Image (cartoon, rainbow, N blue to C red; front, side, top):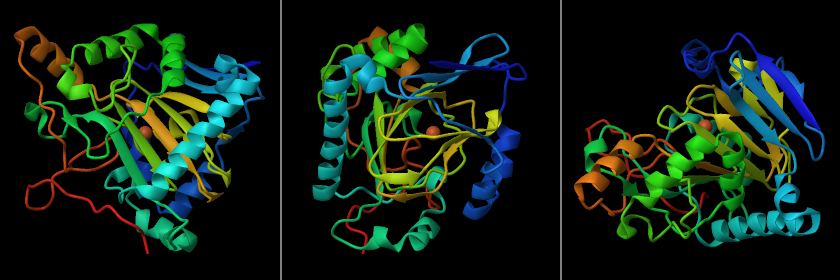
Length: 323
Ligand SMILES: [Fe+2]
């Protein structure tokens, strides 16, 4: 079943989310929680999806309630879904994620204090992986940089869904990745159909109100794990969406203020995206025949890499168990 909603007050080409964003970013975690309580709750029925359109019928947000079955069929889809959860959970158990370093998780310590079980080893995990290629904010001239966590994590389903939502953009992202030299993508790109250069994996990390100003356009988000709560909120739409394991959301992440509500339990969120600063750089390097840097980055920040520290240098992050 398709659930449609038009937002005639939003024109995505001219819409600016700053007012909503600043208001929410100044709130405590508890205030964000109580504010979003007043958003309209949406439950996409099993097998259906929710589609939000702007005043020009352009897509703002899509929530797929059962995309694994849609693509693979119910039986195989369930297996794929379970395998993704088990793979990421196992990976996080042998390679603990790093402490997040971005405005999306600025109240990370408060979140841990509210959930002390996340700090007890060895079962618990709380942190962020970044896999793929990003552009360092303020250091774009250095070119694309492979993130420190990088290894191969394909997301074929997200590629397929983005093609259904906005094929032109999916193809543009795919062409940009194809134009990269092998040295720049051999660690993370295993298909010539790849269209996401960067994947963040949030392990039990709460995401606060933000926009992804460095993103190309769309971000695909999928939660996994055994948890209650964790609704996906879009402040500009005044909606909060039930967001369970097996769902996939596609959002114009650069234009809409989004965040996750609190949950209880273990929750992993996979985010697939691409930095728009990568596009002109790829084109330029490709045209000139220049070689793109394949050095790894030491800077951090999920989707918001390598912010400058007080000294002007890049902020490093620690990797390890939280005890
Ligand atoms: Fe985001």
